[in-house]
Amino acid sequence: MDDERRRAAGSQLRREVLGEEYVAAAMSRTSGLTADFQDYLTRTAWGEIWSRPGLDRRTRSLVTISVLTALGHDHELALHVRAAVRSNGVTPEEVAEVILHASVYAGVPIANRAMSVAQSELAELGFAQAEPGS
Image (cartoon, rainbow, N blue to C red; front, side, top):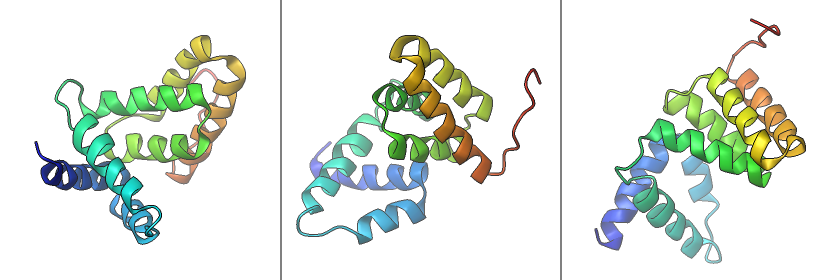
C-alpha cells in the first residue's frame, strides 16, 4: 500500500476504534508543528499496524491495554480501555484480567495504577462496580 492508501485506511480505522469525536478533536488541535506527527500516527499506527490481518481488533485492544499498563501511560490507557469496550467487544472483566496478568510481568504498583484508570473509564461508560467475588 502507498502512503495515501495507508493514510485513508488509517484514518477510517482510527475513527472506528477511538470514536469520531476523539479523532475530530485530535485533528482540530493539529498545527504546523504537529501535522507531521498526526500524519505519521494515522499512516503507521492505524494504517499499517492496526490494519494488519495477523490479529483481530479485539486482540489488538487487549495487547495495547497490557503494554500501556506496563509503561504507565495513563492517558492512552484510559483512551484504549474506552475504545476496547465500546468498539472492540472487550468486557470490563477482560480489561481487569489483562491488567491483573500484566501485574505479574510489569509490576504490581503500575498495574494498581492501571486498574484505577480502567475502573474510572468503565464507570464513565456505565458499568457498575462489581462486588468482590461476584
